[in-house]
Length: 233
Ligand code: C5P
Image 1 (cartoon, helix red, strand yellow):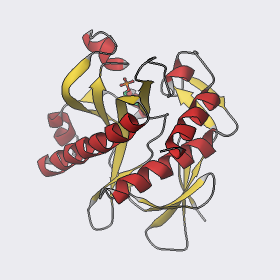
Image 2 (cartoon, rainbow, N blue to C red):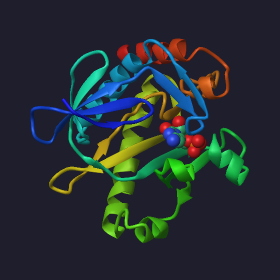
Image 3 (cartoon, helix red, strand yellow):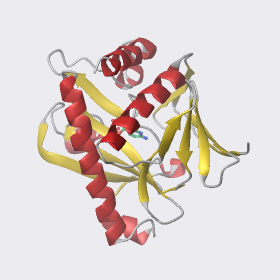
């Protein structure tokens, strides 16, 4: 097994099978592009279990991703894709960087979901970019940009419905896509409390990485509570 890629939260290995990778979720947690960093026992397991659950549910509802199956508490088998260097963010309510950048009050509901692209480039601090920048950088053409937005909004609809069943509000989330060997655009990476903002509808309590970013609670306890809610669905 060759290590193909190591990121902040995951390692990707090749397998004996062509076009199939094994992903290992790590216990490392970072915020602010690595400015804050810790290791927390059990974090990799929780994000693997939560991501596997979401990818399975999306598949059941007709949204294909790179996910093939969960291999263990901390590992998944996935289709090999070439990651498109974009962080695709969908926002239903204002929080985080859009509050700082555009001055919305935190929690303001948007009339319709907003899709944003960020250029996935650590050295540049992942800047927000326009569709024209995406094309200028040669990352995607008009057709691919439309497909990324289409899938992002479908995923948002599906996730909002699931959160609703748990009395939770999906504030925003980040997803990544890749292209398989046939050029199909597939949802990849992860969907977990690391990559979503999720609030309790009544108390507005966070079930996401903001508890770590803002030092307001235990990340492991928060993710465990969220996983228990998912399992009860
Ligand atoms: O920080 P910002 O408000 O732009 O984040 C929007 C959403 O994208 C949040 O749910 C956050 O957790 C997620 N995100 C992420 N990885 C990043 C940046 C943002 O998962 N590098």
